[in-house]
Length: 280
Length: 299
Image (cartoon, rainbow over all chains, first blue to last red; front, side):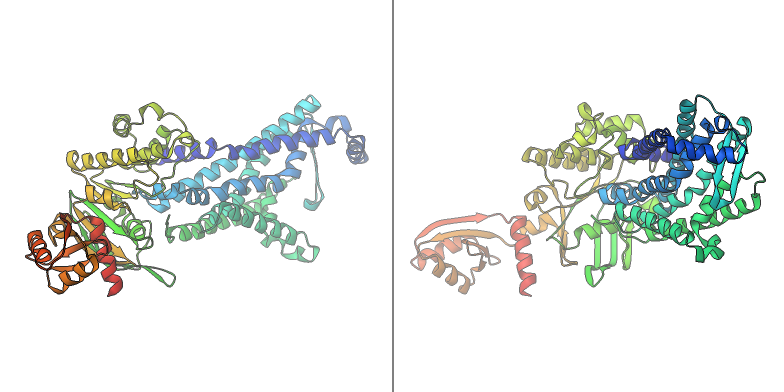
């Protein structure tokens, strides 16, 4: 029955038009980025960065590089927005519309219900991130007519790396996987707020507020010494998979930190939901 | 079938339900009456485990609704005041999803229930295109899916036209008669409740004022409607003479025990009144309900 219920939950989620806003928005942003990259100034900045470090522009201004670039610049803000939108809805929307009362007239336990709803969020997160990764790469490959090598420059992560096509593609795929794991925190936070007595929009806004506040605080130079307490420091761990020598311990630490936070948010949300009264 | 013992529920400082003791017998149609805010919907919410009582216990078929939820609600169906569905999905998909929260959907059972509520032609259309009456019928269908022996209906006639009300009434009576279902109905439509219910409970401000069989009440207290040339005087003197207990201001009164309409007609004529109307009346549920509320307010 569990998988039947999960399938139904996914059906409810993916049958809603608003679920696809995120998918559509990312395709639009990807096209816009590619369009802007056609501008001579943008290309020149890229060319100067590569050639000044001894790398060929034509080889590394590639489908792979552009694909990764699009994810780097849009993943946090846009990805966070659409994940918070869907996860903030998952419980609160059903309460608001009254379908939650219909469900809870059945002898299903509240915990079981939350469990399948949260899993649906997890699957959505994974699907959105994979979609972003796939379409970014596809857009880049179509624009540059090929994969090419992978170049990544992320100064805040002390990252400057180049890879050949094969290694670059493997790193790209792996990076997407780690991004989908670290993005779960946004979904679970939205899910947690959704379990409380608030409107779906409030749950979404609260989630985004927490994430943005965390991001802002992390980037204040005076707080650099305790940046590993910030959520967004750990959600950025997927970028570290592009280092020449991958700091696996650091990435594992980040994922454990996020995993513990996920569990905490889930428990807090479940406590809130299981103690609520549902009236008309 | 249903037993509530000392059930209390507060929302902040407001007591929504106060020490409610109520027994609902198996196989009956039981009406729950009360004004807006009397505690009816809160009581139904607690029965379904959606609202947690602050005190007391609730049992369905001997199982505690909160500690033995699966067993208590296993064969319970419910309709709410404004039934909600996934408007972007079809009626059939809605039914299947709701059913599968507790058991695999049986296509045969789905078909049977859809046929019973008369939604065959529209069941594959999106619920967002349904009329209010169709939504109510879909709500009844989802309540009947678990093959319930207990049906809880909170304002089932809300928003229905007269034809819809008539259909709903006949369906409820049929379910009770042919399927031997216990049915708990909460409604404001006293005329409907009078036609449906064998047992009644009246709530006011969270308290239970009354709970008994309706046919017992019908037989208590005979009523009469009189019309005389000096109406106010006639009413006053009839009460003073002990023939009538009281009048409602519209010429309708409750006869004293042991008195018949002929006694009243004789008295009026004997005392020089010109009798224009004298007619025994059956007590309606509305009469009973309003009397009860007035007595409660007066007390």
